[in-house]
Length: 388
Image 1 (spheres, helix red, strand yellow):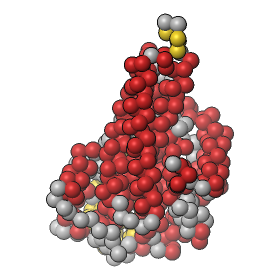
Image 2: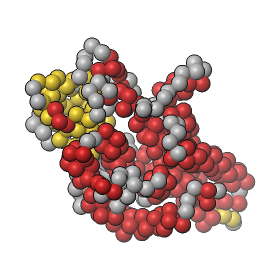
Image 3: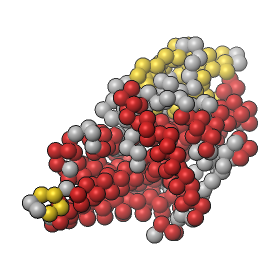
């Protein structure tokens, strides 16, 4: 089936990425997981290899490649067993940089997008708030225009790369009385006067920095407005399709990694005179789990192919995240069980995998929110159309 989606060039890219990760990243993962801080020297190395420019035009040092290069990038990052490191990398490229690619003007792209491709600037996306969660329209952060600057006050939370990053793609209310029609997007320097960050202590994703950000009369140049004022809600909703699909692909990839590891372990672990992969209860359970993973994987590939053709896959991307993240949690929970007592030991991969995977049904829109979005589409016949 993979031949439908991946060419020889794709496969060569995958091998190059795998080699790079084994050489430059894997030797440092335990240190970064322990310290909760990724050495900044890795970012320019990713940039030098072109890994941050997969969806960026060549005019800004990108490669402008099809979406299946993104799939490979995401899948291989999941298979080095650090959800936190993977999140830092994909949040930079597919959260922050997505807005720069779509909305930034030439000057903004030269100032922020090109350095992001090269790994000399690290970005984060500031949408979620302490009191709003998945309710984007309820945000309280404001941006009041005064002359040639906007004055920003408020806070954001659960912001990947928010502590050690260089800039924030920020959503803020520019019209406090207009509800979701009063939101605008900005690019804000992370170290601007009045910006402060508190690092959150997480169950998983230990290598990545996740911040609560506060803004106290932060001055943002009016020239840092992204796109059109008060059009931010539409921009956010459209970007959600890619974000959800990214998280769906991440989920099937970590589930596949868990299954591959469990299968290898079961072939070597003996009980009562035979390897445990020969016990019917275990082998049949593994087959069920593998089947669930493959169904999600093939659905995700088909959805990526549709997105690549320009189809607005809001329904399919939402299903991708909803079903794939649930599947990954179930697969990894059971794979930990296959390892018995060793599954509970941090020296083996399953304990971290389980902690990291649990973020899947929460981040980027909780499963409960996704079900309500799908109910509106399927039951209420609501149509979501791509912006022209």
